[in-house]
Length: 198
Image (cartoon, rainbow, N blue to C red; front, side, top):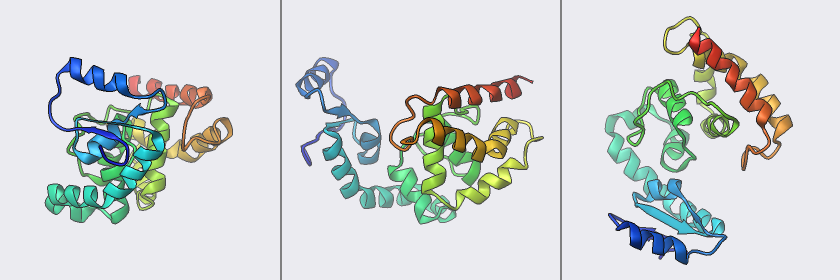
């Protein structure tokens, strides 16, 4: 227990894990991002307790990440290291990070085909660009690669980035916390699948 959160390290038999989850209150959540950050199997806690734990552990997580990346860490600025250690990740945002930095996150096993298919995935991509301002320029460079095989879909997204963001801002003004209700943004993203199939 730390900061009121239950932290599980290593293997836990399923019946014991289910019993642990059963002890949690309705307001507590199982948070995969915090578990990844702590190199734990699972973390359960109230959102406020999880936020405190994440704030406390971010510096140590950044240092562990820097050591693990070795020379590749030199290619990343402090904001990128912080996002990689403690940011909100999903397959699409990790693919975008790889595409823009050339650094593959250790826990990412996907490919550049992990394109954002819905508003929640695009939300995590937006958080990446917002939290790592240096990637904004790399996004502009990506927009020029529209004729390059394998990245055309991403390049088209980069070209339309500001318009999609404006649409999402209108649909879901609180998008930083939730993309609920941004069905129009999801519909816009579906148009890029046609480009991928073409």
